[in-house]
Image 1 (cartoon, rainbow, N blue to C red):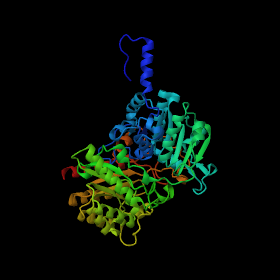
Image 2: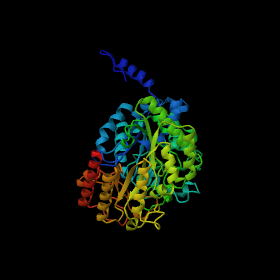
Image 3: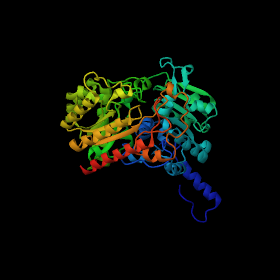
Image 4: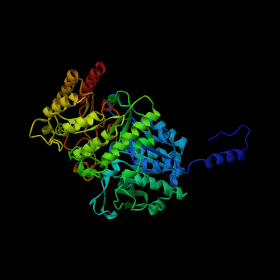
Length: 544
C-alpha cells in the first residue's frame, strides 16, 4: 500500500487507502504447511524437502484457474506464474517460524488461509489458526486439510457416500471442536482429496461478502469431483462427495504452476522438481506400521493414464528449469509411494514415451527391494532414460523381529539383508545411486539398530553407496479406526521441550509422545547413539 504524502488530511488518507484497496485481489489466499516441532531448525542431515509439495498438489486446481484468468480465481493473488506465486505459500518446521507466518498474515491479510497438517502438526496448526484469528478475526476463513483430517474423518463404508456414514476418530478436529476440547479455530475441515474443493471455496467466497459458513455449505456441491468429506464443526454440518473421480490429466503439473526452487544433492547440483503420477493417495502394500498403507489410503487409481501424466510432468520440469534456471540442468523426484505403483506395464509405457521423445532430465523415485530384484531389466531400461537415484525403505535388517512387512514378498527365498545387498550391488552396476529410509521404534532390539547403521557405514566405505540415509522413529498415526490410537487426541506436541527435541532434529518423523502401539517409547541414550552413528555416516559422505 502506498504511504500517504506528508501533510495529507484524514479524508485524503482514507481516499488513498480506499484507492489501494480497490486494486487488491478479492481472493487473497495463502497456503501453509503447519509445523510439527515446538522449537528448533531442521538438521542438514535430515532428508526433508524445502518445497511444500503436498500444498502445491492440493492447490493446483485453484492456481491453474488463477493463472489462466478463469472465473473467480482470476481475481486472486495467485494470478501470477512460476516463482512469484510462491510468496503465498509457506512450509513451516517449528514454532520458530511463527514470526515469518505472522508477518505473512499482516502483509497479505488473507481472506482464505489453507492449513495442511499431519498428526504431529496438529498443535502447530492450532497455533497458526489461533494467531490468524487473533490478527485478522472474521476477515479470514481458515480451512484445515492434509493427512490428519483424512485419517480422523472417514466413511464407515466408502461405497455408501452419505453424511450418516461419516465417522470421527477421537482426534478428529471436527469432533474436538464440537466437544469443546478445541476452540473453533478451524472453520472448515477437509478430509480426502481437496483439490477441486479448494477451488470451489474460493469461488464461493468471492460470491459472498460475508463468508458466512452456512452460505458456503449451501453452495458446495456433492458432485464436485474427488473423494472428500467437508466438515463445518461450528455449525454441525458435514458434506460428502458423490465420488466422481478427479481428472488429473486435464490439470497442469505443479512444476508448471509453481516453478522450482530446490536442488537435491543426489542430482549433482541440478534443480529438482517434485513430480507425481497420481496413481493413488498411498502405497500398494499394507505394512501395519505405515500411514500410507493400502487399507488406510485406498487402492491404485487410474494407473492407465499414469505414464503419460508422469512423462508430461518430466517434460514440464525440463522446460521450466531451462527457463527459470538456465545452465543449472533439470532433475525430478517422483513422489509416488512406489514409482508408478510398481506396475511393470506402466513403467514400460513410460520408457516407451521417453525413448520416442527423450527429455533432458534425470530423475529418481522409490522402489521396494524385491521390486528392484524382480524388475532388473525395467530398472536398467529406466536408467538408460534418466533414472539416477532410487530410494528404498530398508527399515530393518530382519523383518521377523518387527512382526513382518507386507512388502517383504520374497521372504521365503533369502533373507531381507541378503536381498538388500544384491539390490545395492545391482544399482551400483546400473550407475544408479541409492538412498535408504530407516525406521526405528517398531519393536526391534537396540543392538539391531546399531548393527543396521554400522552395516550401511561399511557399505558406504567400500562401495560409496548408499549416498544418503534417512532415519525416522515410528509414530502411531490415527489411521482411521486403528485400535492403538483410539484414546489419543493428538493435541500434545509429539516431542516436548527437552533433550529428545535436539536429538530428533536429525530425524525425519519422530516422536516421544506417540510410539507405535505396544512398543516402548524411545530411550534418550539409544537415540543419542543412533545420532552419533548417523553423523559418522555423513562424515564418510563428506570425504568421498
